[in-house]
Image (cartoon, rainbow, N blue to C red; front, top):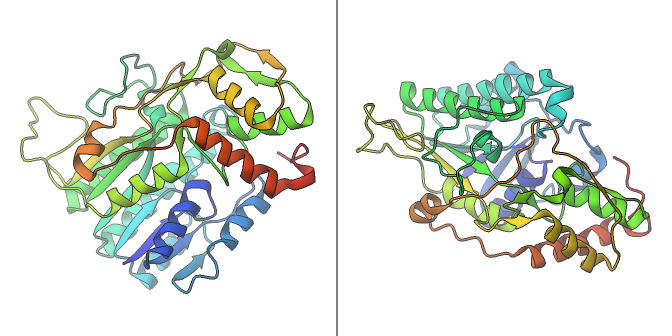
Length: 342
């Protein structure tokens, strides 16, 4: 297939594009390679896929309406995966307009491109952040998610609503995937594992929010990519039993679905740090701090629907995933491993 993937210089988008190319698909990669974090890392990710004959790079921004319309019109992808977004809960407190531009305006341009060019299926990134103030564990796609705690979370909830509207109005099959704390080699420098590793190697204390009482459903990148591909290969279909009298938030009478994609095994943050310390052979100094605004104490994914519908089965424990990350990190940064620029 010819598949348009946005965010191909990003962590998940790059890993997905590599897997699609390896199985013989054509990939049209969209990314503006912005400086939200180190563009050098993004360029190095792109180098992993640029030599594949099936890869075409389009260096444009999602919010550029004319450019996105041209990309869809010129390449005529059969399916699309939208992984480009302004990410990060904490950054949304500082720069809310970036989330409106990319996650709302940009996503509208993706939806319009799919609508006007006969795309068979759009898979898009949502987030576990949409559960917000929910405390019932594990988080279920059949739960109400109307109480987000950050603009980032609100923008992802908005994406789900926007996609559903296009599925209802235009019959465009759309599937939203609520990612749960993705980690692994080639990861994002603003994520905890990256930040912790850098500081521990530099002999600096790490900042541990909520006094270390977080639990996170840490999900290894390979498990995520496997779930995205399985979802992409199974276009959303209407739920014939859906009823407006008792509406199910996870399905619809339109060809729309939303799924959790996580490891289904929450890990205490302190255990996560302990595993990292073991792999680095160093103990971390810890500054214990209160819960940050916009953060939630725990995440835990109920992935039963994704398992039932596409056979998703995460297999990587944090002990194995963190070891692979540390091996990559030390190899990638070498002698400068403790001095990585933010």
